Image (tube, rainbow, N blue to C red; front, side):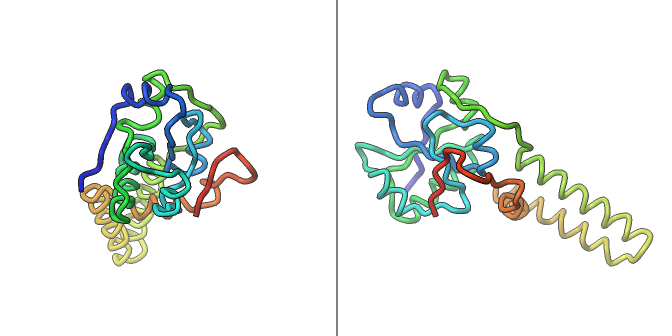
Length: 186
């Protein structure tokens, strides 16, 4: 079964209807806190439980569950988890949160945060740089570390799945302490 998608403009029309559709945002809590569609529930991709969410939101053909992220990639992965769980009343919002804001949907803005994508670039670049220096001056075996990170980046690019990103998403600085109004479902 293929994953259904919706354009931000078409979603904006549905979002203005009564009752509002159910929308889950699968970004990290910190990304969600920075900016999110007003009324979206935060359920990070690494904590997604498709069956439980579908039941909670009473997802059906008449009332599908919409998924959003930053740009559409994590939303697509979340939708695939729903499809794999046998739930097909799921729709990915193309272009993500900023595309929806540009389409006129109200957003809640909070504390600015460093994107997960930027954190991955910093971490990968730092590891490759340090491993290269150590490989040149300490022991040539350190070059294998740089090669391993490079292979991981190629894998991430080909599969659109980033192990380093998934690990960084679980770090304390990417979590929100206290009640931020998000809905974390495990």
